[in-house]
Length: 368
Ligand SMILES: *[C@@H]1O[C@H](CO)[C@@H](O)[C@H](O)[C@H]1NC(C)=O
Ligand SMILES: *[C@@H]1O[C@H](CO)[C@@H](O)[C@H](O)[C@H]1NC(C)=O
Ligand SMILES: *[C@@H]1O[C@H](CO)[C@@H](O)[C@H](O)[C@H]1NC(C)=O
Ligand SMILES: *[C@@H]1O[C@H](CO)[C@@H](O)[C@H](O)[C@H]1NC(C)=O
Ligand SMILES: *[C@@H]1O[C@H](CO)[C@@H](O)[C@H](O)[C@H]1NC(C)=O
Ligand SMILES: *[C@@H]1O[C@H](CO)[C@@H](O)[C@H](O)[C@H]1NC(C)=O
Ligand SMILES: *[C@@H]1O[C@H](CO)[C@@H](O)[C@H](O)[C@H]1NC(C)=O
Ligand SMILES: *[C@@H]1O[C@H](CO)[C@@H](O)[C@H](O)[C@H]1NC(C)=O
Ligand SMILES: *[C@@H]1O[C@H](CO)[C@@H](O)[C@H](O)[C@H]1NC(C)=O
Ligand SMILES: *[C@@H]1O[C@H](CO)[C@@H](O)[C@H](O)[C@H]1NC(C)=O
Image 1 (cartoon, rainbow, N blue to C red):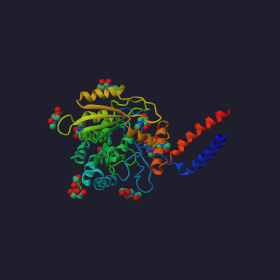
Image 2: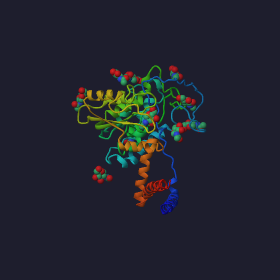
Image 3: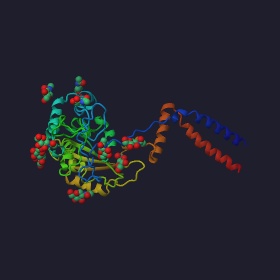
Image 4: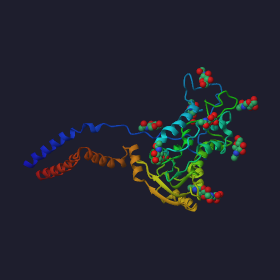
């Protein structure tokens, strides 16, 4: 009888203390990284539903007056590029660039870029179109032990790189940063010299045109990395593609161009294979296409190491999808640890909960 009363009192106390926990129920929205993809991420494959772009020649210049989103050149291309160039060199420098890096001439870089595209038909471009631009923009750059490549993992690889403060992806270099996420195409016999209405992005007779910029960007970056490098791969693709894929940017423009000799050579390639929470695992280290990748890398005389889901990347994936089943336990234990950090004792409630529940089960069992 006493036991039953004690049990009731415990439950009452527990209920009162749990109901004081209100503020904990504030829920923030997790970040949505799913939209972060670069335009043109898939070289060397037929675009399934070949998009026909209409020649809407006389729709004018859609960048002033009422802005209309089009599939053409990004409005303000020049200003964005110049702005990013200055920002990269004078502001971001403080974060991670050495404080003595030579300043590149932004106007000169923009002019080099513009001279290759403005007034030029998009589908005539090829892999040497932007070579002067990349030579200048990447001159003197050597990324030692900090380069990260990605394939099917754009968002998380960039979060992990910390935009250059932890590791350096292609998009964290000046050359690529100036154009990341932008679109452009030249137009002959036009006052602006750029087509602001629609860009082909799919040249039937010259697939190299579509690869002219990002293909060469990838290749030039790959030629400038050294030491230990990392490649973040997707081991839970839902689009039926393998984790390492022939025809990906990594396969075509990066892996073949890593330096094998000289003082700035690549020594070791670390594959980091990620398995997204709540998605099925399609490949792990040592399986399927990763066997092929290992052979390619070892044949090229690089050391190879493969790791499934490093802890810090699991944390990032869970931060991005914290409602996922696999993330719940970690989330609860982190909450408890943080409560101890903040309040010293807070997870005593959880302990007393299990104690009271066990105790009360015992009490009521005895009665029955
Ligand atoms: C995340 O963003 C993508 C594209 O930006 C959108 O389609 C999707 O609905 C968003 N998801 C959520 C949960 O808001
Ligand atoms: C739009 O901007 C362009 C370039 O800055 C300029 O040449 C043109 O006159 C402007 N058009 C209108 C309608 O303001
Ligand atoms: C841009 O292209 C996409 C297909 O790639 C199409 O669905 C969309 O309607 C186009 N937008 C404009 C404004 O033309
Ligand atoms: C530049 O960096 C060097 C070492 O990295 C440091 O000794 C020097 O004080 C820095 N100079 C300035 C102006 O921050
Ligand atoms: C930068 O390049 C532009 C164009 O090539 C040139 O006119 C300008 O003088 C250069 N600026 C400096 C500081 O070198
Ligand atoms: C690329 O195009 C330029 C002219 O647009 C041409 O001179 C050059 O030979 C071409 N290069 C290759 C590799 O096709
Ligand atoms: C541009 O003008 C030239 C000379 O007037 C002409 O030969 C060419 O076909 C024109 N190009 C386009 C795409 O209209
Ligand atoms: C892996 O690819 C699938 C789509 O195929 C995507 O939903 C998932 O977010 C990707 N995983 C990572 C870690 O980027
Ligand atoms: C990739 O291409 C090579 C030839 O370049 C071929 O031997 C290999 O089987 C292909 N791998 C896959 C997974 O398709
Ligand atoms: C590295 O090898 C390439 C091709 O085998 C050769 O052209 C280059 O001179 C070599 N570089 C050094 C620094 O040995």
